[in-house]
Each structure stands twice: as structure tokens, then as C-alpha cells.
Image 1 (tube, rainbow, N blue to C red):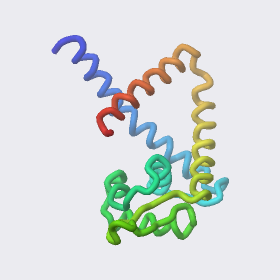
Image 2 (tube, rainbow, N blue to C red):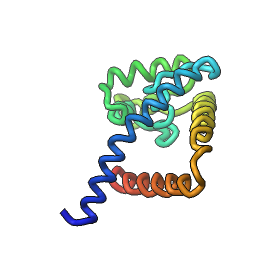
Image 3 (cartoon, helix red, strand yellow):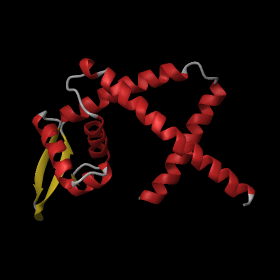
Image 4 (cartoon, rainbow, N blue to C red):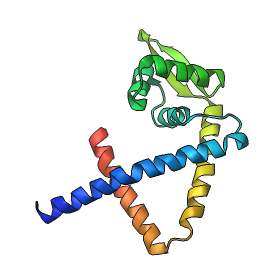
Length: 153
């Protein structure tokens, strides 16, 4: 194994170890802030809002694939978000069997509220890190995000 491959393997192992910790942090924070938000959401519902923010008009099938759930589960989840008036479901005019999903203004507002609350908490946690380490985190996450974006797009 050459030096580059060894470092890539170490980086991959660190990413795999870090993601569950970060995901758990998001779950805990979302539960903690349910009372201070206009609508309480589960993590899958929050992920749905985020996905539809990035991909307005996505199909139910695309959402199910993203969430790694069945179409029936995604449909139930979106039904609850429609009832809360956070998303809309419309038939695709080109294919009646396809459902398109979009955030409502209330959905966008709610997503921003959650992101602001969690961002504030993350910022508080990171305040104790030296500026050089913070810049390393920014640089590393940017590189990682760009590398994965090239693979999934």
C-alpha cells in the first residue's frame, strides 16, 4: 500500500467514525428544540425538507431513494408534511403516476428555523477551538463535500 492509499484509507475510516456522532448530535438537537419550533419534526421529516429545498419538484420515488425507505413509507411521511402545510404534493402533468413534491413558504421558513438553531449550537461548541483548527474543519469539509458531490451528480 503506497502512502497516498494509506492516508486515503485513514481519512475514510475517520469519516465513517465521525458521521454517526454528528448524525446523533442532529437528532438530539432536533428533539431538544421541538417546543421552540412552530411544528415538531422527526429527523426523516427534516431530511425531507432539506432534500426538497435542494431538489424542488422531486418525485416521491426520488425522495424514497434518498431516505432509503419504501415508497409507501415516503408517501406516509409526505402526507404528514402536507397536513402540516410544509410541502405540497402534485401530480406530474406528464405522468399521472408520478408525484412531485415542493416546499411551501412555511416549509422553507421551518427549515431555516431548524438550521439556525442547530447552527447556533454548533457554533457554540466550536467556539473553543483555535482559529487554525476551525479553518482546517472548513477546508476539510469543503474538500469532502466537493469530492462526494462529483460522485453523486
